View 1 (spheres, rainbow, N blue to C red):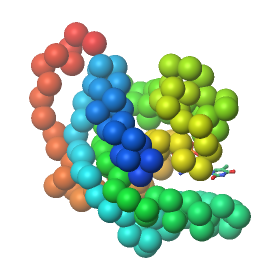
View 2 (tube, rainbow, N blue to C red):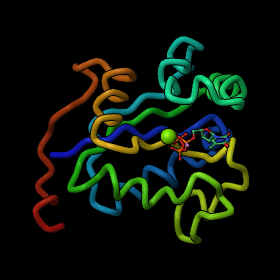
View 3 (cartoon, helix red, strand yellow):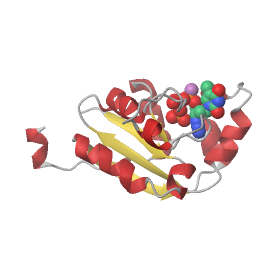
Length: 147
Ligand code: ABT
Ligand code: MG
């Protein structure tokens, strides 16, 4: 079963959106298999955003993501990587459709509420970076068979 890494960024935590965001993925039919509220070290932030290292906004990005607690999660389910990205909406809230998380709650590219892995390769890399093996659970959800 496919897994992805999702994270409520510091702006989402400060704005009390953890419950709203978790609820959307639960209602969609996905299964939460790992979660923790945590402060992010600069080292972890720099590894997470390594692909943007040369970009002019890299410093601000690391400052932002380390500015307060984030809610890191692993979700599991059918096509969860691409579907979660669709549910999040486009990176720039100007382009994010109403009904998506960013479309409904975000106004800035830099502070856009949620992160989600953008491919199977990044999902594997990011889950490994943020969670240890024993923090990602495997448990039966019998309701899954109806969705
Ligand atoms: P993330 O989920 O944070 O990775 O966002 P997403 O994959 O939708 O967008 P990318 B392109 O990976 O952007 C990473 C972070 O960099 C911020 N950003 C991006 C800017 O501040 N300015 C820019 O011009 C671009 C392209 C947005 C993302 N977020 N944060 N926080
Ligand atoms: Mg990204």
